[in-house]
Length: 209
Length: 202
Image 1 (tube, rainbow over the protein chains, first blue to last red):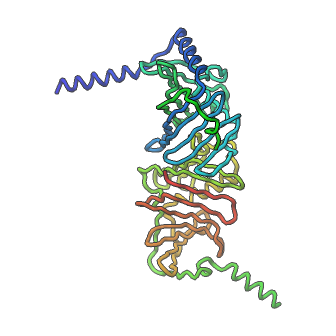
Image 2 (tube, chains in turn orange, red):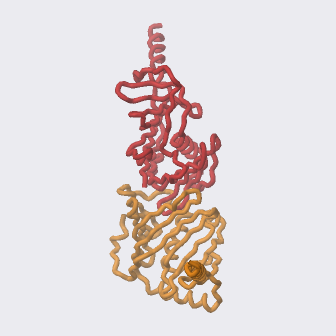
Image 3 (cartoon, rainbow over the protein chains, first blue to last red):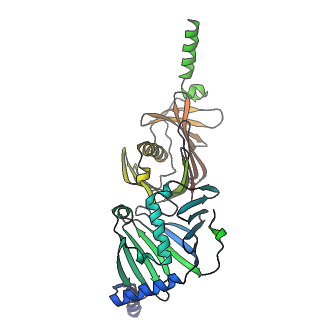
């Protein structure tokens, strides 16, 4: 029994240790940026499954939706939700189109300057080139499993809506594993990518709603 | 004089009450009660995919509704991508805007949403009268913020809330696809305002 307890404590401590994050030094930051740059330059298309978690503090559970994301350089992006409803939104040449289970629109709300900026940020984060953006203050962290960069908007209007963007990169190729947008309250939206295909040919037709 | 009489008669008919016009039979007796159970479970998150049409615009999103206490509800509307559009609290008769996107911050729209969401979540209306229609439908008359509503039940289950003015129908709140006190589909329709809300549970 005592051994079992010891084992449990040991496992708990090790898990804690693994989850621990530490600051990155300047050399490490430069190395990460170079790696992200390299990956970004070599990326023409991305296709990936994603799971989105909308956390609202007053709810018992996060709202979970799933779908597929497609990106083609320089700036065509499609977010296609398949579960639990069908909905797709395409950003192409600074325009936005929506197909809401058959109802097509280019809704005014989504065209608001704030949302355009937000979407641009998500695209840039998927591409990994958010670093060129001087609109943020950045801080860098590492853990045994990932690199984490926190972007704090300088613009007051954006800041009042999204307090910070957090990107998680895998340590091998600096691919974006996860995007987290934290609101000034405790609410956030978290998008986790999986089964990513890089540079698999992607028809322009995909980006029509 | 004859025209005046006709006009007066017409006016009288026009002002007739909704029950009279619809041949509802008034039931006397015990003080009746009716419950709207569709947002009543404190442990449940009520999540709906929404389609809203307002004026000529249509937009979609996700509604999250939760009962947080007696006469206390939180209603948040986000885009499908998770961007918050509005966040309201209803605490007894108090209405609080926790957040609203500047593009939606229009008094007329807020008042309409506030009214619809308040009606939608009102759980225990104070019933003034109740009526029966041929068949099984029961009509329970109540007032919410000085407007007249009928809670309509069939087989003791609420399937519609109807707002009336005089003898005329103003708004419909229709609950369908009901499973264990959970309305999986809700439609809100207005006769004079170009606002429709369609909710589907996800």
